Length: 386
Image (cartoon, rainbow, N blue to C red; front, side, top):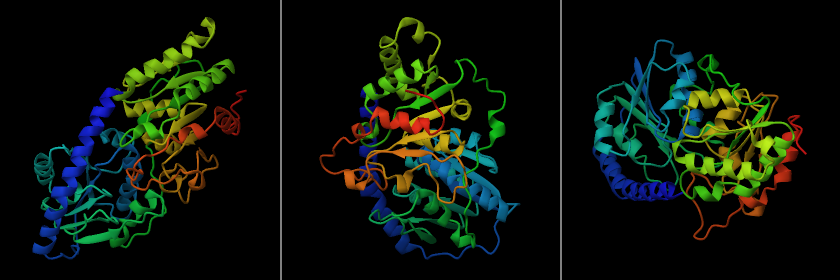
């Protein structure tokens, strides 16, 4: 828990610097440089993807649509170490460049070292993406104008970010300057999952992803004892159990497994509890998600990945607005719809837009989701838990 708190302090400082320095710099550059027209022809395009895994998955829809419209276009993805694993699951791009986003001048140098004709920024609120675009050397740049964020001044073309639609539709809107109207969904390259053995846990198994990240992550997590009770009921019903998470979740995942094991009769706890937290990459996690009987996850990148893989999914939401960030994507034709649980606006939830708009003293809402609510949702996927 301490590591996450320390990381959050670092992010808070970076956000303050991003606003205090980024806004005046972008305004000045916007005043000094006239807007340029989109090149009549272009051979290369870069996509800046500097947010978390969930955003990267949603933004990946741009790749397939651009490739379909411009088959000869060379697409470079400018990613970070935090989300680069996503692009092992996505096809269609030509070059992947890791950008040290917390080191602005190094980040700018890295992008300039891989020149493109057009640079598209998928960032919604940070100014660093816009600064990188402005100083990239690209012939034409575009990105979001987000209400209240003052980040759009230096782009050659601006797309208004809509706070009332699903974020997937906002990413799709970035294609409008190219004359493209997208209704596509992000596509996971299932060939990347071939050869990964997911049979080291008794089948069938459920996947739990209890961990959130970012600002006030603790307000978006389900109570530990609720996970323990749900695990008890799943294990007693004969399901195996897998806990997923990143390197920062290892200690908490181990603690959760210990709590579950202590609450079970000894024979039942043997061979059915496994944690992948911090032990495998995103591709292996995806394989386990795809082959699971069902997934229960808080709103995070793993939730989006499970939905895109078509896994039976119960998504737990509190302050996060599912209309903006939920796993049911507009236009989806999947017969197996994820189930969203959590307090709506009338119950005090679903108020986050960009992810940091908490009130001064935010209330904890995730305890409004009962274990029985989750059990009933899982039963809709023919997961027989009592």
